Length: 114
Length: 235
Image 1: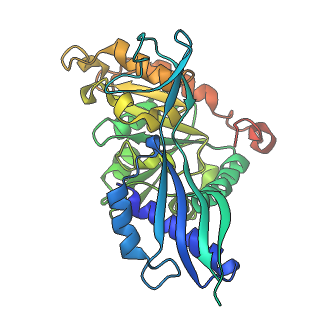
Image 2: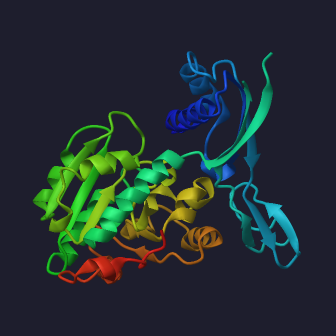
């Protein structure tokens, strides 16, 4: 739903960084998007194709690394990712502690040609 | 010959918004105004919660409202009619959430010295508003029982990121098969601390407890607030 706004911010940062280091072209953009960030690939790529022409990122590859929300179950002493309509441990049914919240929205790095 | 290399960035994707939000926050803190970002689905009762709170606090705090909607100024007119000290309408023109720069622009039209408590009513949406910090000290999530007890599973971020949760339309709970225990279980998995207030804006049930809690978070009016509020809330 908010993919266009996310893409606008992403490309502004990438463009500024590319300019700062004197890159001719951006080849790859590496981003991290958590499960909880609710950003969808199809929609993201749609806006990427729409907004990149004429910028240094035109034709670049957008690499999205997904991070899940993870819990730790103290009873089983195991980590788990939740399934279906519950946050309970799939083995014992206890509600565990969140260890990785999966809320990341980060630009890790860019690969550029200079 | 061209050279290919990888440059680490390591920035939050919405860093540009976060910086404007931090500047807004300094303005709020300096003015001694408690700002609440009100987030919920369309129809959960954001405006109704604001109006009920206005009414409950009218003898204690001057309440201002910034309304965010895709179009129209119905909500700004409603809160002014209900006794808001100031109201400003933002029309996002299609954007599904408010962004920090929109609040910065609204502050040119809204006198922070005229209010003690400022509600920012976000665009109705359980997804997008959570990612855009506006400079608020408190994030409020309003959920209505009619939306179902499974919303924290489907939209975890808003429940995880909120400082306080209002469960509205509590008078409908029996009619809509809202399973209270399952709702609390999911919210607590994501957010062990946030207070949860069960209210009905229709009957007024629970409003006093919620408004009392909120009032206790606001700086006392008339106090020179620059030192009073600094450090009160984590940035």
